Length: 116
Image (cartoon, rainbow, N blue to C red):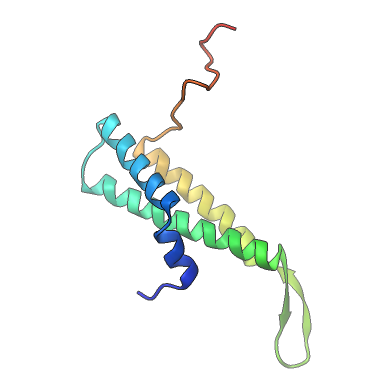
């Protein structure tokens, strides 16, 4: 599969590796092991790359884009990346739920059972 420069940069980024490692570590801590779950993490990371590319497209072209059919007709239309971003984020959340991964709390987080 051919990848463009932006995709390659994302796949090689430190953030990509950190997120992937964190997800795999959380699965291990939760006792959720197996190739099926590891494959779901890879699916999640593919969606993460897609999400980043969609955001980049929206930042570059805006939420509305100009179209030109070459026959003299021009106009503005909604950037399809906006809807795709929403759908991609929803699918990413579904994968996290399937994996049983919830945001982890750190010492600095205010918990519901902490006294103030």
